[in-house]
Length: 105
Image 1 (tube, helix red, strand yellow):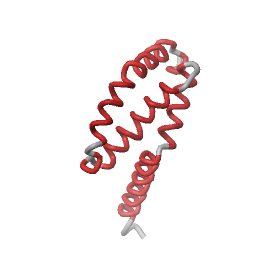
Image 2 (tube, rainbow, N blue to C red):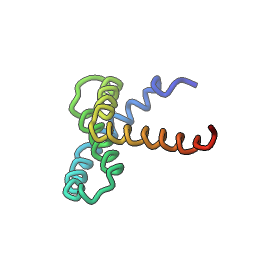
Image 3 (cartoon, one colour):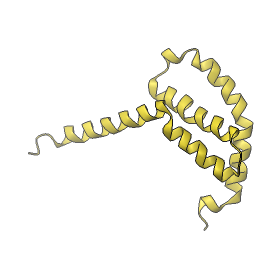
Image 4 (cartoon, rainbow, N blue to C red):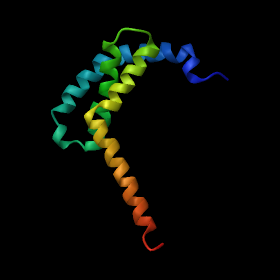
């Protein structure tokens, strides 16, 4: 079986999905953003910093679907909301590990 990145069906479907979903997701996100202070920060990060950043970047780029995918994934990674989410998850994982280790020494 080939690797998913070598399957042209993935790139065709991703391209169609991103184009079809981009504007509708922006309209949805614009409404949700009005309630940003009511949203759980993790949910807001995934919606606005994750999905929103991905679709926006993907659709504003020129190039092949593979190239646009790479640029969109970098935008998600570099998004400040996602950075805070990643950082918080790392801190929680470390705290949990330390908590589980207490009493072992």
